[in-house]
Image (cartoon, rainbow, N blue to C red; front, side):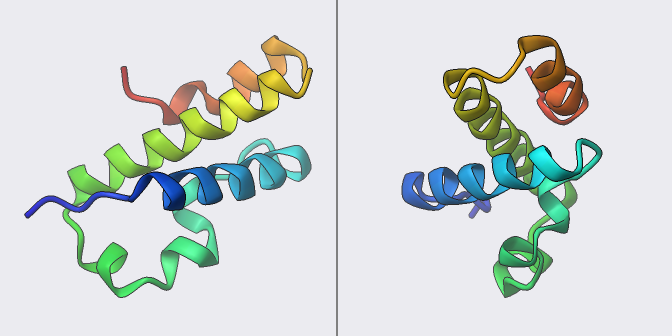
Length: 84
């Protein structure tokens, strides 16, 4: 069974990651204690973690853009994390 986040978890972690990006643009969702300390996260395969990191970063990007933050800055902070 693949590792996945529920929609509420993705939204909550996306919001938290958006807050972190405001302070440190080089942050990664995988570093968030809310995720890193979860047993299911640690046991997930690397490709599953990359997918979840991408989903969280995409959620955070949307939140920041809707909040009016400059698109260039938001894209620069999230581009390398989002898999298309």
